[in-house]
Each structure stands twice: as structure tokens, then as C-alpha cells.
Image (cartoon, rainbow, N blue to C red):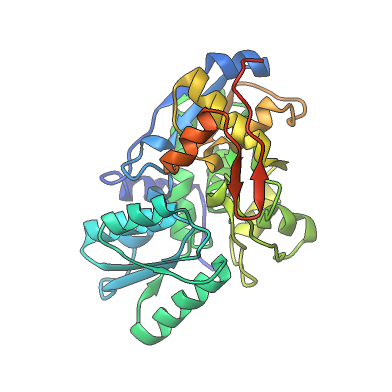
Length: 337
């Protein structure tokens, strides 16, 4: 196993400096009033690909052996976009494998960056099978969306920026999927400030890392349609890094419903005029629904990406009902509460 530490995260910050940007950290008067503590928003939506995933993908690609000429990965959308962007900048081939659950807007965004896209099966496990075949038959290098030391270290650079700007932060609310983001942030933040509280937040259906932490081993989940589609997928039976990091370093993990995510997306738009995808809003959904006990401020919420289908987003803003596969979400007109 390769080490993941504050040192490797600081090295990643230097490595990706010409690709990923230091994103804004802005105050949210509305959520501060709602939570009774100062709340700040870390806008990873401002990355060149519209999501934090560029950090880990760029760090992984820039650390590849010189003889690697092509990469592949399994993705729910944003990791694939990050890999496509970084691969194009490095002049290497990228093949992105995704399931049929990935929204078309994310598929189109990856193709626009010059990568080959393959839509395989109904879940990430099916897509990973195609990645494994490409590695075996074509010699491509597999870049895990989360369980890779360079990816994790790249994501951890967010914490370096946060605590340099606001060393007084007491709580971080981090979207939780495979654990690359939460694990990387936790390594850096806890190394710099051991007392900081880090809470991983995810949707209440198909939450693989949440279930795995509680089981003590990688747990199988059923993937379903979700506003937080970027948080879908399993953590792999042979998980090497992220389950251990999240189990040891996260102070808590919380679940939010589709309705709570829907309302948080509305609120972020109407109160802060920010466009964000559902996975980006799970931290705000937990805050808005009162799920966080003994909230200590200042609080930073990681707003992870903006790559949302525009038609669906317009329907949410207008309070329309939504159907995502077998998931039905009752619409609600936004009202400040």
C-alpha cells in the first residue's frame, strides 16, 4: 500500500497547481442564520470541469509512469470528466465507462473533452467489468474514481485550502460516495487540526460507504435513480484505502432523503443564486433538515459540482414532480422557512 498523508497531499497541491484552481470559499448569510453558526460554501463548482474530481484525476494522471499511453475508468460522471480533461492536457487516450444510470448531460460533457465513452449495464459494477476488460485486452491503465492514493491525495488538497483560508473552522460537511473526497479531506484536515469535526453525508438509497462503515466491510447496495447520482455505486470488495480512512477519520455519516436534496437545491439557487447538482447539496440538506447534532461553527460545506441536467434543474426550481427511474419525488414550490 502507498502512503496517504499530509505530505502526499501537499505534494499533490504542487502537482496539480496548473490544472485545478484554488476555489472560492464564500459566506452564506442564509444558511448561517438557519444553522445558528457561520456557514461557508467551498465552491468546487468553479473548477474548469465544474466539479472537484479534477483534483484527484489530474494528480493521478500526472503521476503515471512515462510509458502509459492510455487510461480508463469507471465513473458516475464527474470523475470521468476530470480524467478526460487531464488526459487531454497530457496527450494520452481516455476511455470512460459508465452505466445507463448516468445522466446524458454528463455523458455529453465527457465526449466534448475528447474521451471515448462506453455505456455498459445498469450499475457501476457492470461498468467496472468493462474497465477490467480494457486493462486486460488493451493495456489501458485503470484510474479508480476513489480508491487510489493519488486520487485521494488530490481530493485532500481542498482541506489545505480551507484551513489556510479559515484555520478557525470547526466542522466540515463533505458529500460521501466511494470515500476519495471524504478520506482525502479527513487525512489533511485531521493532520492540521485534530479537533475538527468531519461529517460525511450521502443519499438514503444505495449509500455504499455509509453501509460499509456500519458493517465493517464492503457492503453491497442496490443502485437506484437519485438526484445525488454522483454519489452512487459500490466501494469494491477489494477496497484498499477509503473504507479504512472513512471508518477511522470521519466523526459521523448521515443520510438525507431525495426530498431533502430537492429542497436544498432549490434553496441554494433562490438564496445564493448558485447552480449545483444534487450530490453537491447533501451537506446543505443535512443542515437544512436539522440532522446535525451539536453543530459547531464555523462550518464549511463542500459544494462539489454543478454538472446537473438543465431541464431537471429547471423543473426543481419550478417545483415540479420528478421521476428518476423508480424514484418519484414530489415537487414543492420554494418558500423561505
